[in-house]
Image (tube, rainbow, N blue to C red):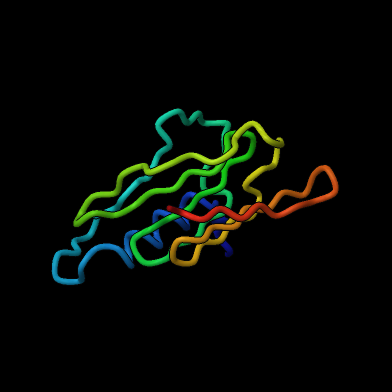
Length: 116
């Protein structure tokens, strides 16, 4: 029997496995990242990427959120273009200080952001 796992579950699982030092990992530890202005219907976590201590998450119609880890905690660093297009954040990727955000409407595009 196959189990369907949504994107937020994958994000939680990924952060649980890779962001907590092995010596402090206990069953039940998890980290849940939430946008400060998020709503249930935003689908935050539809697309996710991580680079070092930075996570980028895409959410339909609610923009893209970037979180940064400092020690054992994650803080919301910025929000990118939530009102550009309905599916802004359909795909996201981050490497170092450069993030790219994809949309499929109208006609498709990719937006590149560089952290200063």
